[in-house]
Amino acid sequence: MSITMARRPAFRTKFRLWIYAGDEKLLGPGRVEIMERIHRTGSIQKAALEMGMSYRQAWKMVTEINERAGEPYVEKHLGGKGGGGAMVTEAGLNAITAYKAMEKKLQEQIAAEFNKSAFAKPA
Image (tube, rainbow, N blue to C red):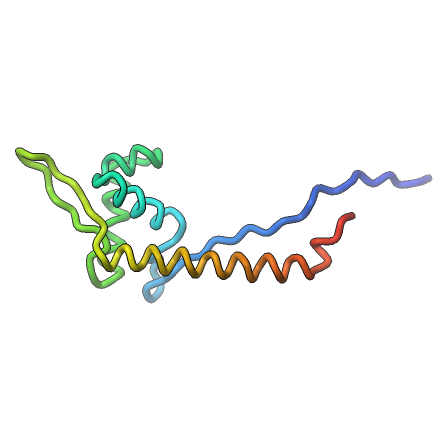
């Protein structure tokens, strides 16, 4: 009796970077994305809609980021006659830049190690 083995799919890595403030999540892929969208749209509401999340969830996320960072990464302007809005602060933009640079460098290191491993070899 012979065993026929199906050709296995190619292996790959998946990696997510989280930055913690103490024991609490400060920044990760979703939090960086909401900040980037707020920066582009000037609105927590619009950023939330683009990401398919509720305004309440996005507002909570921004509040947590600001509290955990110890300084505002996103400034929230409450609505009124002219409407509200939001903007990513210089500290927030610096955090996004640092996160993206670290993520890119780690992805490159992981890819290099993976390519040297037995997982990268075809079956």
